[in-house]
Every structure is written in structure tokens, then in C-alpha cells.
Image 1: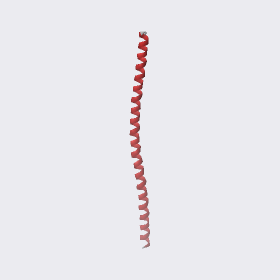
Image 2: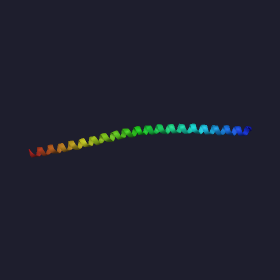
Image 3: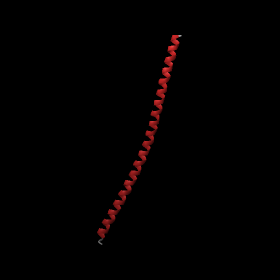
Image 4: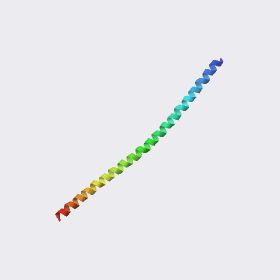
Length: 75
């Protein structure tokens, strides 16, 4: 085997292996970022659910206040 061919094959193998490691590293970083974004979205969704509950309670309390005001006016 000619030394030029051997060098070319080793260079090709090195390039393929290096590229694979680069892709794997980038993929791991992307997966980590996606996980972090999912955590933030989950916190946001919990906040939205709590706000919906708070708004419902507020409407209920406002209705009760209005009923009490009407009773006071009747008296």
C-alpha cells in the first residue's frame, strides 16, 4: 500500500470520527437546552393555572360583595 493512500485513509477516518464527536457534543448541548426550556414552560403553565384559579375566586368574591351591597341597600 502506498504511503499516500494510507495517509488519505487515516485522514478520512480522523475526519469522520472528529465529525461524529462534534455532532454528538452539539446534540447533547441541544438536548440540555430543550430540557431547560421545558422546565421554564412547566413553571409558566403552573403560574397560568394558579392565575385562572385566582381570577375565579376573585369573581366569586366580587359576586358575594355585590349581593351583600344589595342586602344593605334593602335594609
